[in-house]
Length: 279
Image (cartoon, rainbow, N blue to C red; front, side):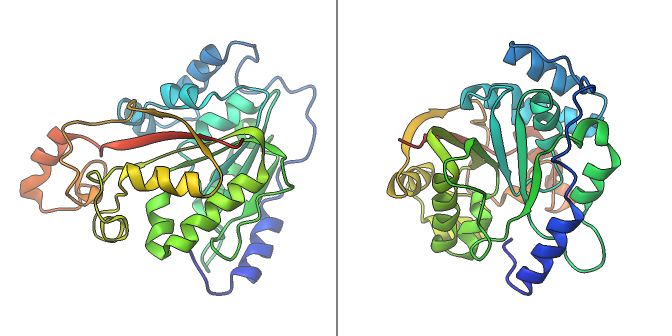
């Protein structure tokens, strides 16, 4: 969820603590073999030992190779990941972009009480994460500066839009505006999020179920200047009724024990996967 208290102080501290990139390591071949074959590099990044078995087990629900291929990611791109959370996708993006690309992480400043788990994750494995170009504080709607205008090829975010909408529709618009500003012409904004039933009340669905209707998200992208380049069903789950709180489903299973088997049979949530392009 967006945070508003003391964000300037926290942001400055966070940025200073996470200045781990910006150093060239020409002699370091990186965690995976660099080649012009994006599919092969994604496959190698997914298989890496830096990914936990628990994270790998979720590939069947999150389809990272297919999702990133749909967005059109290439290993020489400058990519910004918004609000990476625990770094599930960072584990894939960092090695994939290590040799020839640049990865910028726009992460929430840590709460009081020490470094965030994300910060600890990056610092613990410089072999994989040492080439991350920058880690910048990101706390919409106040802190949404993603870098110089027209400096990025791709902005990605995964299952975060409902949190920004929970704050307000204006917060969600602020994120889209920031992405538009930092992208080059032809640059891609790609994201996934939990899907609500078509034409449901977006704000109500977001607050009660942590879901957003796909038609609403398309409208948000269009009104902020993007063109819709595609809508993939790669992360669709027809078993999900789309009217239950996503935290009752795997992996959280937050509901009563008696419903866990039913929720596990459904699987993870039905998700939209949208690709927007800056004209």
